[in-house]
Image 1 (cartoon, rainbow over the protein chains, first blue to last red):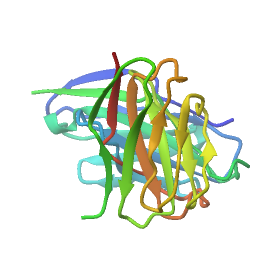
Image 2 (cartoon, chains in turn green, orange):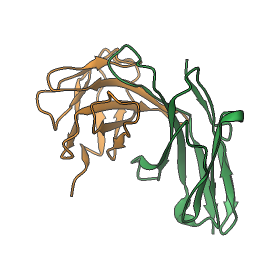
Image 3 (cartoon, rainbow over the protein chains, first blue to last red):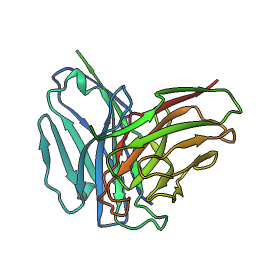
Image 4 (cartoon, each protein chain N blue to C red):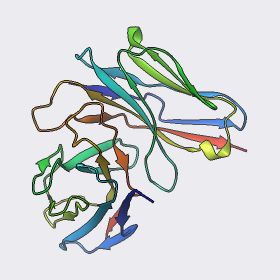
Length: 119
Length: 116
């Protein structure tokens, strides 16, 4: 069964510090997708990134960067020069290529990491 | 603008009452989903629907019901059989009916349900 672990429940950093959010996953599939979502205090989940299992290149988008390492089953998320607006709960999620048999490819979420950026 | 809307944002219910949460999307997405989120927890799937007039149970369907009469609408009813309904409910949709593992789920703003 697929599983996503976000060991950091809560993190607090001072503005302008860099912070890394960890995500470790378990899957028996060789083909899968990993996602990161941001949930600000308003509640809506905002899609940040999708990465397939065959693409281990790191990705950078502005202050955000993602490090995917299949050898350690990790897909970590780094925010550089954090800002107060980055305060949110961040979720990592996994979708396997194996058809679940229930009619849909299930998306499994970690429990999230609450990031607080202090001014 | 295209997107997913959920209403109401806050909902209060007395014990023993059924209540219906609305989810509407104008993205022309095939599949729609309902998730429940409890404090400090990830999202758990309640129901999903890949096409109109069809839906499937997720991991925690007991005490909930849904309908999919229109492509753009997927209302969730929390029934009196749901023992602990106080939670945050999120609706999502995907373009390809969830038939591709590459599908990205896009979420609405959520409804916070409180049972008094």
